[in-house]
Image 1: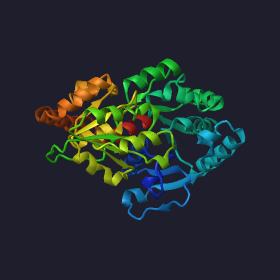
Image 2: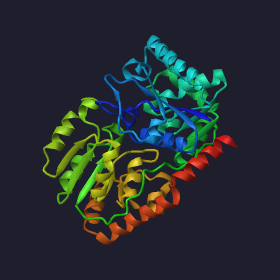
Image 3: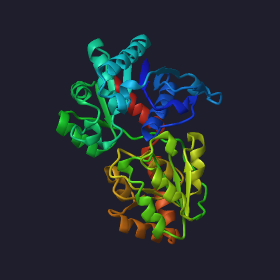
Length: 374
């Protein structure tokens, strides 16, 4: 059985690249590829071509079994989305790669690729798997989806309607998918990289991890740093040259604050140590699918304080964090939890217990394969 996985920004898992755009969605596709290889499947991963990229020499035996192919990016480049010729050239490049792979299943978790991958599968009668990443992926009225252009949106609508399998992360995605496409998705939990149960030391480190995107509201870190004065605010994310200049002033201001440390991008194999040393993980996003940062925090016994994001209400139902609801309450929650060791330890232990119960990689890949083979 063979899978082709389109993971456009997943280059850094297999290649040495100067800049990296990978987030939680890319990490989950990478972990899925690993679990599929372990199950005995053949896996090809398609990424965007990156200048001067070289193969990593430190890949383990599992990653070395994954065939990595690179395609040109311009069909998905926001600056060229309105250029029909540019779109056509890149779609042909992608389709050529898909055709020669001769895979049994074609899979993506990236909204901008729903249309070209799905159209190929419809025309060639191939089995097509969609995986929701963000809550907006199945909301055809969202601004981010409108930005891709009318052609991509129209084709995406039909390929979502006729996809063979749709995997989603939470009940909100399920409701949106059913409302807009009259489809029912399969809720499947995310993979994890392992659990660290070492005793926690209160280093009074408040961790924020993510790309500087509008919907993640990194500007709120200014308010938090000004009001949470007896802790270090550690910011891990892509350096400004990796994205755009929109947040350069914000980064400069944060860098000038005495209790803020801006780490920049951290490779996947090194980021666990930052979670292990942190006291609290904070999330300032409007909405997400199921943040991988939550899983990484709980895997290290670190409680989460989230402004709004609460996938399937698990943060509150399993008592593994706090949902603040507004920035003023969030600041109060951070200060209070920093000083409350008993509550932190309880929330941290609950997080580890939750992962052990619901995020066993072997059980998740079994559910995934059973869903597409039954």
